[in-house]
Image 1 (cartoon, rainbow, N blue to C red):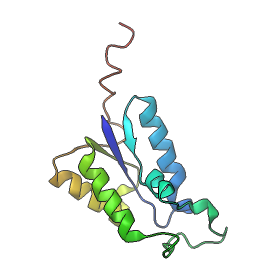
Image 2 (image 1 turned 135 degrees about the vertical axis):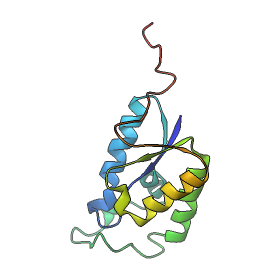
Image 3 (image 1 turned 90 degrees about the horizontal axis):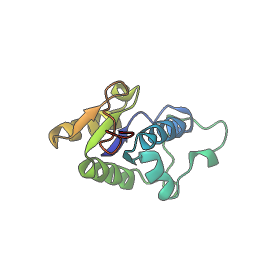
Length: 128
C-alpha cells in the first residue's frame, strides 16, 4: 500500500521532520511504500537543519529557500496518488494536515492513525 503521511510541521522544531522520518521508517518496516512531505521537501532542496538554531518554527522560510506553493502542489499530488493517508499525532491542529485529510476524504482514500493501520498485504501470511 502507498501511504501518504499527514501531520503538523509549522510550529514544530525542525518543522517536525524527525517525526515524519520516524513514521516513514515505521511504515516502511511494515512493508508499505511511503510518501513523506519531509522527504519531498528535502528532495526539493530544503533541509530545516540548515536554519539557525534560534529559528522561529512558526515562520516558513521564503523563496528561494522554500517555495510554499510548490510544496502544496507536491502535497496535493501525493495525496491524490496514494492508496491511504496516515494521520500523524497532532494532525488535527495543522491546517495543512486538515486540508490533506479533507482531500483524502474527497478522493475516497483510506485513512489511518497509528493504532489502526493494517499490516501490509505482502506481510500477511509471512512465515506460513
